[in-house]
Image (tube, rainbow, N blue to C red):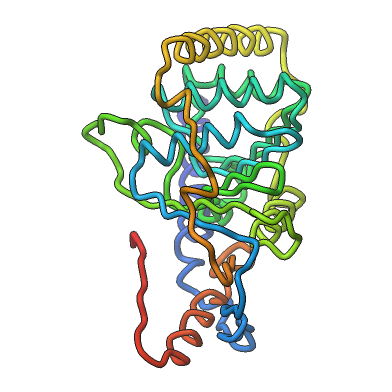
Length: 315
């Protein structure tokens, strides 16, 4: 009887593995979307003729990129929107999360959107997640959380790294949150990357930050996005409270001793340069092989170039 049950279990497991291989791997080699009829943005839409409301700064240094993030949070008055692939470990993460709790405590409405599989808040880091989810002014959602019977969704990850504050300040780029990206003394696995900081200096609606905000709103309301928790147990709430208290204690101490990461004093206008236009583009929010919207847009831009084409990409 036990042998029969064991064989039955092996058959079910084998069928499931076959199902996963087909749905999560093989299916992506099938050209479900050919790209025919895919629209793109006209090259002329990327150029402006007069100074825009957006001032920008390229952030080459990871430590400075972290200081920009924490000052944005410290200055928040109404809203913070965060969409991140991963929140890693380290002192930089602890200080940024503590600053986020401080902002929420003073009434700033905060939305945190994380990748549903690779978000990094696992194991002993779950206390941070519980602290976020249990705060009355913080909402937490997952983009494509793990669904065992939808393996085609496993490939649909959210690689965004975006933060927007009050519709006035924005940062976007390749860095996640963590010492791996933001530490002053780079650890062995440090990632050298780049971010772009934008300030809507004239507080106008035609800012690129409005486009970024609309994209986050679309992600937030999308059917692929789910609430991280529909109910927290008392144990989870208590664990979150303990983690929050530890982070705030660390943050307050860092500010008291004048730790430079926790006490940035960056002048947004003085540290940025004016632009004529900044554009934000993204591929469609869809599963399987995405329609090549960005690729076609890049091709059109290259074909319209008169003198040179400069492309920067980590991949």
